[in-house]
Image 1 (tube, rainbow, N blue to C red):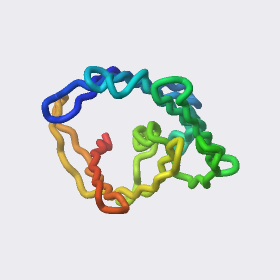
Image 2: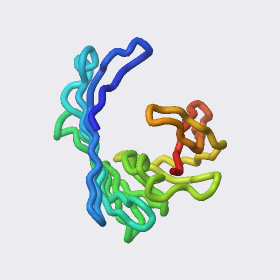
Image 3: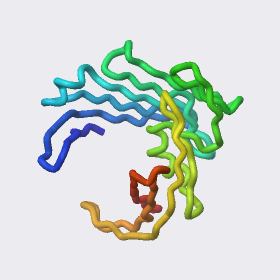
Length: 175
């Protein structure tokens, strides 16, 4: 996918990016590369790159490595997932325990495709190169959404941050 990034209601273009999902029967690679444009290019130099590599299992995507490059190769951070010992080594060489449902920011976007949630509450963790975040999302109901291909039946999910300052909604189409 290729897309443009906009800021605010005036539609200021601040960057563009490409997104790739590649896989074979057992392995995957998800990568996105972004470049700041316009005024944003004055503040953010170089290209940003994020990549996840791992295995495709019967339980969905299982990341093995998550990399972030902020503008140049010397600003590269890596998190390494060790599933046999259930630990992750973060960029600062600190290790933390993994639970069975730990993803990275790229695999979490695809996980419900591979293993849709089967309960009304779904808890999981997301590991970046610096720390692990814990999330619980709740199915609020069903909603029919109109889009260019017609209408689609969806499930509406909701999350509130631990400090109640941030909320997020997302819609999954079981079909």
